[in-house]
Amino acid sequence: MTGEDKLFTPGRLGPIELRNRTIRSAAFEGMGKDNGPTRMLKDYHLSVARGGVGMTTLAYAGVCRSALSFDTQLWLRPEIAGELREITDGIHSAGAKASIQIGHCGNMTHWKTAGGMPVGATTGFNLYSPTICRGLKKDELKEIAGYFGDAVRTARDAGFDCVEVHAGHGYLISQFLSPYTNKRRDEYGGSLENRMKFMNMCLEESLKAAGSDMAVIVKTNMRDGFKGGLEIEDCLRVAKEIERSGVHGIVLSGGFVSKAPMYVMRGEMPIRSMTHYMHQWWLKYGVRLVGKYMIPSVSFTPLYFLDDARLFRTELSLPLIYVGGVIDRAGADKVLDEEGFDFVQMGRALLNEPDFVNRMRESGEKNHRCGCDHVNYCIARMYSREMACHKHIENLPADIEKEIAAIKGRDGKSR
Picture: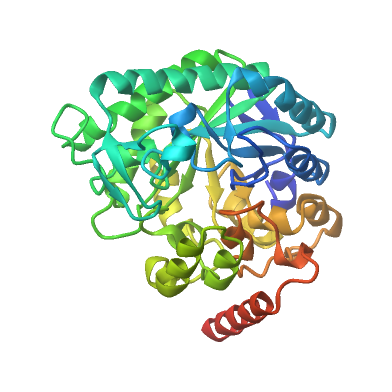
């Protein structure tokens, strides 16, 4: 099959069929309000659906109150199912499938948003928040796993075709998997087999709730991205366990938001842009002072997860979804045709150009490239307001313009 054929031919994820092999990745939009959807969130995902994507994913919906980190994050509960149905109906009318990512932030939240002390695999202090968190009790684990099932049922009522369970990036399931955050001495800690038990509980409840007509996929790490975290051998064992659970696909990613955030996204974090939108004065100046040390840069290269992902492709048989540095038609074709992956996910490319998929199709050119320059302004501002590409913002403050230009200059020299 040729590259032109595969990218734009239908592909299956369990019970659902996508019109092509492209998926809008679950990149947090920051477009909610009071933990519910907004017109802005609807308009963005409709623009991506109309732009030709096979499936678009609403990002990071908490399964319960303690799962939430931001007011702009969705809390997937029955009270918002009707509003979400308006979004999924619009996505379907545009010919795309609708997915929603579900998860629990674990220790990466706050008293105010979580409604109590943040919880995690183990009691400790999370500098990322910053906050003290409490280790979950054994009887609470079953309850939280049940919330995953409840969230899937709400997603069904809201018209979603697929749910993506977040088991990576240092969120709660990942906190149980990683030896860096899991210091438990009971049957949920110690060996990797024990550390996978909570994940298995969450997947079991999700699959049970999904039934036979909804797809369930899982985002998981290939590496945590720092010394003391999970490395590729253990992550491969985790992926094989996920495959045995019966899910319909795996999104291969990496990184740990509270320890190695730029391993996930690559490039440089624009600290001035990040702090410009912060409201707390103490946090603003603290991050300006030490941010570049807390968030070290990791060089961006196209298809930056591909070397690791190849090993997973050879070891797993279920559909695999590649994410990480897909910025042009040539890269998408390489991943699908040469490397044997089933789908590609894109985030920043579809923020910069919601119609990027249609543009690739219409141009017919192998070297068709999105206009994203990967300065990560979109990521820097999402912690305080909605994610947006700097190219779409009029009258940016002079200090932000200067920072963007400096990052472009450094990036150009490094290539």
